[in-house]
Each structure stands twice: as structure tokens, then as C-alpha cells.
Amino acid sequence: MSNNSFEKELVKPEEVILWVPGDLTIDSIGSGWENIAMRGYTYNYLDVNIPAMRDYMIVNYKTDNLEMKRRGSNSWMSKHVNSGTVSLLTCGEDTRWAWNDDLEVVHVYIDHETVSNMANQVFDYDIANIRIPDEVGIKDEILPVLSSLLEQELRSGGVGGNVFVESIKNQIALHLLRRYAKLEFKEGLCKTGFNQIQHKLLVDYIREHISEKINLEDLALLIGLSVPHLMRKFKVDFGTSPAAYIMALRIQLAKKLLISKKDIPIKVIAGEAGFFDQSHMNRVFHKFFRKTPAEIRQEQAQKITQIQID
Image 1 (cartoon, helix red, strand yellow):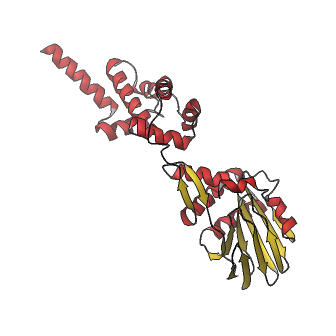
Image 2 (spheres, rainbow, N blue to C red; image 1 turned 90 degrees about the horizontal axis):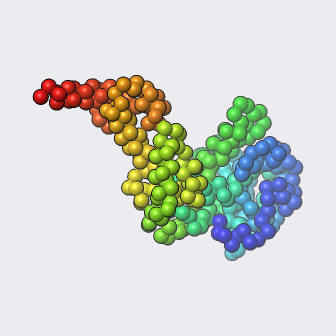
Image 3 (tube, rainbow, N blue to C red; image 1 turned 60 degrees about the horizontal axis):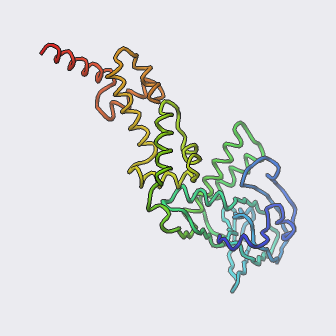
């Protein structure tokens, strides 16, 4: 979807019925879902002009052997649709659709920002433009399943509903990107690392909070970047990911404390260095040193004793 599409008066999910008259069968609007919506309709045969949509729209068909036509800027596209096939309205363009019999569908709407944010998490550079061309009556093994899960949640609900919907929304966004999207990347945004002030802010913050859980969101907020942009610049500036850098500091600190403060229990040192617990610290040390913290401490004590004897 190009940025120019946002200059138009785009149709929201709840406004589709004004352009495509039908009977509403299911509706998620008002259910608390964020940046995703579901609406079901039954239609008589129609030939209608549909203005540019605000959101990406996935049409799930519940009618078999129906001829579906779409006219874009140049010519008609025609396909026979069945249960399990989908159409995509995604380009932010005015289109004309027609079908020759009664029709039942369930629409899933997912907003542009969700797809854009997912793209920035998946790819190494910020996205300048995302375009997902319109499709008519395509076979897709994933979208009907995800849509069915959303419909089931809307009809019956359950514990953790918002978390469940959020996860399905992200899976839909990722699937659209992997299978249908055409992407244009912004050039040169991450060929350099942080400026001097940003670098110092990050280093100071991490060292001051090394005993606590450090979130990427907090680091990004600290220097005014998105999380994906932070991660890409961090790799350029530090040569590794934030998680790897933080873990290396925790290992260094824990090893220093093991040697310099031999009377402090290892579980206390694990907490001061920011490990979840002593078991977590044991696993990390064994991975990096092939030794446990206790073995490293004992080995250092033996070296000191040997020096004293000599």
C-alpha cells in the first residue's frame, strides 16, 4: 500500500456495508480487538464499485462454485470461488466487483500499521513501501484457517481472548508479507550506528540496570528509535545483538564477583549479575566456559593457595 493511498478518503471496515449492501452475520467491532476486525455478510448478486479500503481486507468464501469478477484500472479478472478460497482487497484503489448469485462471506480486516510493523521486525532495513496486489479466488492453506480461528473466538470466546487474537493477527500479517507482499526498502538508514550520545546512554543504562530485566522497548525509548531500528543499529555499533551484549556483560560481572567476593553465595551473585537464578547462571557458564560458577571459584581459590605455598 503506497503512502499516496492515505491521502484519499479510505473506507473503514464498518463502512463497507454502505458500498456493498448486505445482511450482517457476525461482527467483531466493539469486542475490544485492536487493529484487526471481522465482519460476515450474506449478499444477493451484485455489481458494485468499492472505494479504496483503509485496511487490508481478506475475503473468506462460504459459498461454492460462484463466479467472482473484479475490474481494476484496465480489465476484468474472473475466478470461480469456493469454501477455502480467498480474495484480497489491499491496494488502496477504487475497484469494481460483481458476482452472479447469492453469496456468503466473512471479511477479516487488518490495518496497514500492523503489517508495516511486522515487516520492520522481519527485515533488516526499514520499509519504504509495502504493496500487496489484489487477488481473486486464490487457494491459500493458511488464511482460511487463521480466519476460522478468529471466527471461533468471536463466537465463543475464552480465557486469554485478547492475547489469542493478537497472536492470530501477527500470524496473518506475517503470512501476507511472506506470500504476497512486494516491498521497497529505505536505503542507508542502518549503515551507521548510534551517535556518541546515544551510544553512551545505552552503555550507561545497561550497566546501571544489569541486575534487572532489560527490555528492548525501554532501550528504544531511551534513544528515540523503534525496536527494529535499535536492533539494526546496535548490530552495526556493537557488532552483536543487544541480548548477546547484555549477556556478555552479565558473564563478565558474575565471574569478577565470583573471584573477588568469594564469601558471597553464588545465588546472590546470580541475582546481582541479572541472571534469573543460580540454575540459569550455571547453564550459561557451562555453555561459555565448560565449567560451573562453583568450579571457577574453586579453581581460582586453588591458584591463590598454590601461589601462597610457592
